[in-house]
Amino acid sequence: MRYMASYDFMESFRNANQWFGATAQSFASYPAFALAPNPAFQWLAAWGEVTERSFERMIAKPDWGIDTFTCDDGKDHLVKVEKIVEGAFGDLIHFNVTGREKAPRKVLIVAPMSGHYATLLRSTVKSLIRDCEVYITDWHNARDIPVSEGKFDIEDYTLYLVDFMKKLGPDTHVIAVCQPVPLTLAATAYLAEKEPEAQPRSLTLIGGPVDPDATPTDVTDFGRRVTMGQLEESMIQRVGFKYKGVGRKVYPGLLQLTSFISMNAEKHAKAFSDQIARVAKDKAGDNDKHNKFYDEYLAVMDMTAEFYLSTVDRIFKEREIAKNEFVVAGHKVDMGKITTVAIKTVEGEKDDISAPGQCIAALALCTGLPDSKKASHVEPGAGHYGIFAGKSWRNNIRPLVLNFIDENSAAPAKPKKAGKKAANTNAA
Image (cartoon, rainbow, N blue to C red; front, side, top):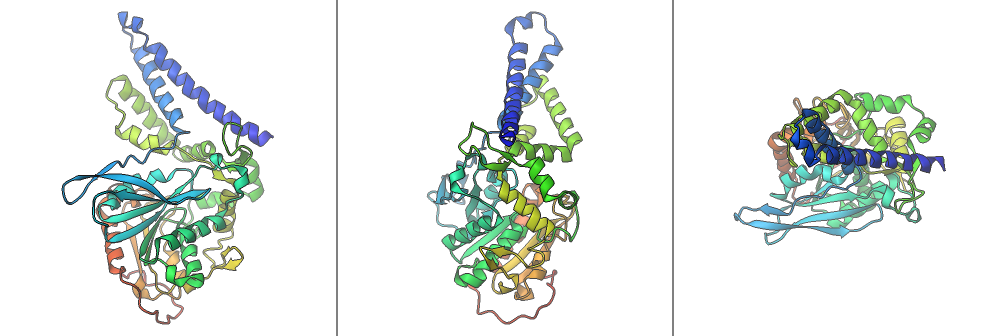
């Protein structure tokens, strides 16, 4: 019961702070105060506005906000978000640009389940819609999933990816971002053994922890320091009575957000104090840089307890993917069985979450894949976020990824037997 009480306490704390913000803004904006102008009231109103907005965003799933798209014909076409596959824990959705010819490239983006919604990849999706038919995994908030739907761990996640790939067919190009990189690799290897005709044409793996020990970071060090018992005792709570998933064990989004912010506490504190100053001086707006970033960053979702704990235990502590010992539904997956799927890894030089070396380890695992099907790229000066969004993605990485897709769009020839050697990381 105490796990549920803790969950409800966090929700009450969030709700109270939202109310405090709204109250402060309302009080400081009382019209009579204009008779005796005082900067203190402007600052109080600004604090209230920023506070209310921030705490309100923590429980709302952001909208995709991709309503229209201007195509090569110069016309604005409506974009419909369509569910292709519906599941209890996640859907496969398609951004259907109505009225245009079908794009030549079919791309599946595997979004992370690491505290934020798939909408975190909004800019990635928008940058690809122009040239591709874009599909993405849209994971659900665990607090809204009834206990009757059962568990959801990393094996279940992998099988979801298998089903999504089978649905889209072998002419698909998969782009996995961050957390799902090792599980996407495992799903492809699973298909290579079970249903090789359903494998995608290519995999682009962006900033994921295939081998967390290749280049340790604060994230991997944390996974090493704490025991599984400590994690379960301190991080896991039961969903409160307000939501459909009442009673489900989760790693709460609000607790995750606390961890995210604590990693760069001074940076975030300065960002909010600067925003309060801008609001007080009437220099802020709904779509300014701060609000655009934090409206997404503060919107967090709960993860099922079994998914979080199995990720830490099996991916980071036991390194099952890195050691090629991962088991899915009783079947030991062998990455060496991937023989026809072209694989490209992308890493950021200054990535402090999944540092260079962690993702490229995927290439060495794929011993059955010829070097001509392997490629890698390290983006100079880019951090974690920059390798899938922002200037580095738009100007450098996206063109490389599209070129890689085009080079590997033809149906693969019958694979040649490859020796068990290390990957050629310089392949184009």
